[in-house]
Amino acid sequence: MNAARNLVGFADFTVGKAEGEKLPIDAAPASKDVTGTAYVGSVCTALKGNAVSAQESATLDGTYAYAVQEGATADCEAAVEHWKAALSNFDGVPPQYKEETAPYDNPQNISFISLFNPNENPKVDCAYFTCPAQQADSQQRNNLVDGEGEGEGEEGDPEADSGGSGPKPDDGGTSTTDKEVKALVCVTTPKVLNKDAAPYTQAQWDQITAGLNKSAAPALPTFLGFVATAVGILIL
Image 1: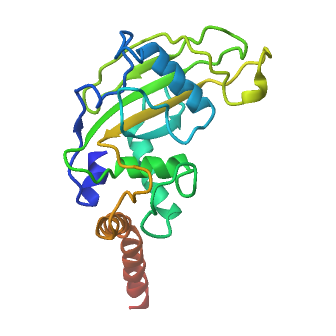
Image 2 (image 1 turned 180 degrees about the vertical axis):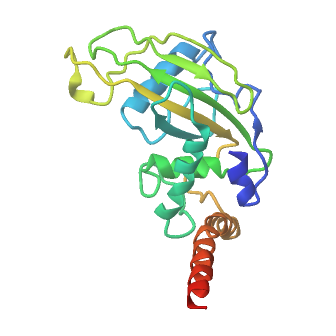
């Protein structure tokens, strides 16, 4: 993640350690309002429903990035490349934030903004969620998560007990089985997206676009250079 931020001249993330900077995935209660197992269950329900953002907690006020994957462990590089690719989804500097309206109705766009969090002293915490397929009418949701604080490799294995029914709200009491979902989920703080406020200034957006476009540019000129050299030799 920091390699991508370095491309645009943004400060490195440091690993979130304090309450409010970490995903509350521990089995012990994070506060009187949320437990790790309940939080993991709510995130898995959101992921299976392709929600725009992972489920927020009572103790965490950040901006989420997630990428659905298939491996046994997280592929951080692939996730970052997926998030960076959202640049093409924006026509210009992102407008004032309004929930569930374009461009904020696309999870990839939210993830892009989370990756390029412009706030001072930004923090990040990540975990790789494994949400097993469950019977839609099951009362027990055994959701697993491997904690992956950026650079720390911490692991947890909480079991979740939540009542989400998966991606289709009308499944109700049917006995169909939903799909297994795995995803790398990160949260960056301080929060970037605030109601009726734009996430970036024009100067910040120009900095992002210039950095990303510059990093993608060398491939074509290098290829053309080899072609020109080869053609020149043949002509001579």
